Amino acid sequence: MRKLICLLLASLLPLPGNAAVPAEQLPEIHALSAAVMSEDGKLLYEREADRMLPIASTTKLMTALVVIENCNLEDVVDILPEYCGAEGSSLYLKPGEQYTVRELLLGLLLASGNDAAVALACHCAGDIESFSERMNRRADELGMRNTHFLNPHGLNEAGHCSTSRDLAILMHAAMKNDCFAGLISQEKAEVGGQMIYNHNKLLQRCPDCIGGKTGYTKAAGRCLVSCCERNGFRLVCVTLNDPDDWNDHGKLYDWAYDHYTMHVINRDSTRFEIPLLGGREAKAVVVPASEQRIILPVDSELTVQTTLPFYAFAPVSGGAEAGTLRLLDDGQLLCEISLIYLENYPVE
Image 1 (cartoon, rainbow, N blue to C red):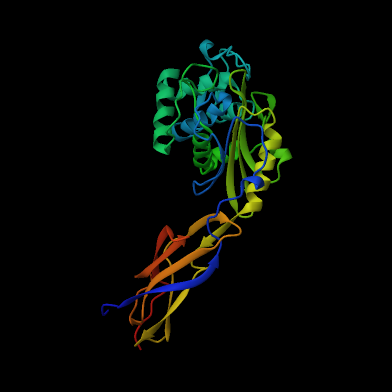
Image 2 (image 1 turned 90 degrees about the vertical axis):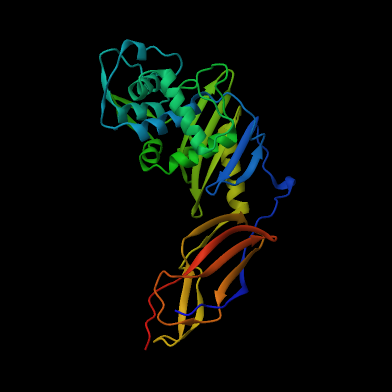
């Protein structure tokens, strides 16, 4: 194929872009720290989102993720005496009992069993200290820069803390794991002959809530991390030390979904045609090489620019690079996507 001459074309694709929401339109909530994060990592709402605070049983989100990533869920765990008798919420495990990892995870995520957290940590890493090291390594990998774990359950311990931003990062990552998402979304489950119920009342109270984890200690106050999927995209909401967390999560979700929308750039929504010389078709179709999902305020505009050739010479191979597409918000580059030919275009 001959070398193609490229031209920068400003494509008129009117899409919303990133604009600040006026302060008077923000919801009133009661949390000491809060964050609403979109699936592309943007904070749509924040209140002291980087303040390091005790996080109580929301710790168990990381406990569950590390266990799921490192253990066979059908493994049998022998309950040892040292796993039993943890203070606070409990599955009331007894020495000599046996549970699968899956059952203990349900007890951890639904009933917030502190004894289940200890049993899982020791099964996974041998002891709590070694498991906490794994938790911290995983936090580093996820980019949780202001988090430090000292135990798998979240009971008060000096230095055990996180932030609403970091917990939002964690929840988004965990919800991408199908096993985690399937467990945390259950409203009830039978574990060891007893029926346990999910402490996350948002599953019943908030439309489209698909998971969450509660937490409470006197030092941490009421803590809540939840995930909601509405209008085709996911948001995570975190409130720390919030006496009215159920209502505040509902308000924050309603506000966020009213003020933000998802735009999907893919081969179905975004196509270009360029003249094709010497081929069976008069034009070649060009599409994005990968899908890009962007969450932006509903009342702003996005600028889309493409770099494409004036024309192409057949034959052209489907999947071959054709140019680039750039998305800009108020002149600032959001992302750049490769453009490719949709299919093969042979010569006459």
